[in-house]
Image: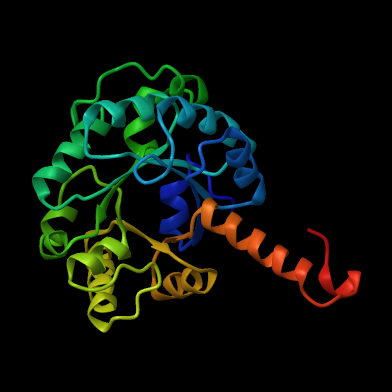
Length: 264
């Protein structure tokens, strides 16, 4: 079963797992390449990525090369950018630094049409991509609250009880940092790993989806086996730099045969 925006909820309820491609480079070209690679989901990072609104729209257009759900991590819990990205065609949002139930309710209000929320009508691009958009949007659009601080960890049950949330997304670097440890996308501290497990368990009890950012392919496999619905594989910047470094190392290293080196 191929994961699409229309069947995202059903896909995960049926036990499906996904690898999320994380786009930080402000380019329609790289976004299209990520879409063509075969990631199950695609996320445009407007918080820490080098991406503004206009480029994000172009990246969403380029991602039409894939049926995968198109998610945007907005810069902050601010209604204006949340509504604009949904109107532009994003089928889901990840919002950083949700620390309380009130903040989660504000996120839901900005991303859901009445009566569940107070999202303003004007789906300029979204309505052309999805027939009957307004009537379907509250089911179509996936809204994830980031649980990434010690405060959010403590308030996780109240946050996840907010009606209208689709799921939670863990930022392990900020979570570890807020707990007094070095930030890492491949955490090893027992306390941080225990906190991640607690968040996942609470999400399962609340009937919500759960995703997490990962610093390596091995970590993605690990979290999917742990029970997460999806894991994000590093970033496009990181993968690009890693591939270039490996290719350069091979170019400067001992001679190898074509069959053993492969083609770049």
